[in-house]
Length: 340
Image (cartoon, rainbow, N blue to C red):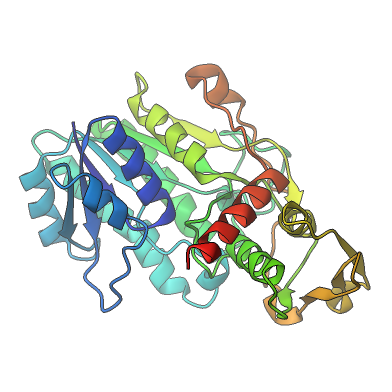
């Protein structure tokens, strides 16, 4: 099967490509031509599947080139994972975030609408569409109340998917994943910042981890499991929208504790607010400090997904959640450090 993945160099794109290649599909990954040549997440795939893993230069803002590429490939499946995905950063680059995420999706749907044989399409939303939700946990029917530019853009993405599904007959499904992390997450994300710093400290580093609101909580899952859920959504009998979540919530404080504990460092916390610190209980060494510069203008705290629909309909459920995800990542960070 011919599959196009937009955003193949990202965390989810790389795991998705890996999974589909193992299943025997031919993958066409779409990458942007930039000065930053960073394909570390997919280099092992290029070496292992030279005949079935292809990379193409294209950009959602260059509609003509993208149209030509999709006509040439003739994909049967298309996974749209491209676009700026950092919530905190979206407050600083709001316009470009909305252009990449929402307007880029509109361009893609317009192109697919005109193809002779449109592929099945999976659009990726985000729990951030719920922002400060009216109900906990959230379901696919929970009203959108985004509290960040990123959340607004993802909300537009999901509604566009529904419009093109119902108005033009495209097979457009939508995944609404809650936070899902892994060793392939970028260093600018708080989870990777936590686990990589914990690994270095366990190896003798004297650095101190600086974080914002430790009471901020998320429904954290494991990325490899979530991309498997994405494939189930796109292969189901009819297009629909599904939440991907663990159904549990973990605070930043608990995530930090899970990461350090997995490496033999038990933390206890002292102080309040911006004066709060985390200390290794056996040695008294300070390894964490709260810094107000990392607080967000708006930080949702009630985002918990109800995965009941996808579990009942497609048989998917998460195995790892919260502190277990942190522990898995921290242990893999140590392995990476040992490999140099």
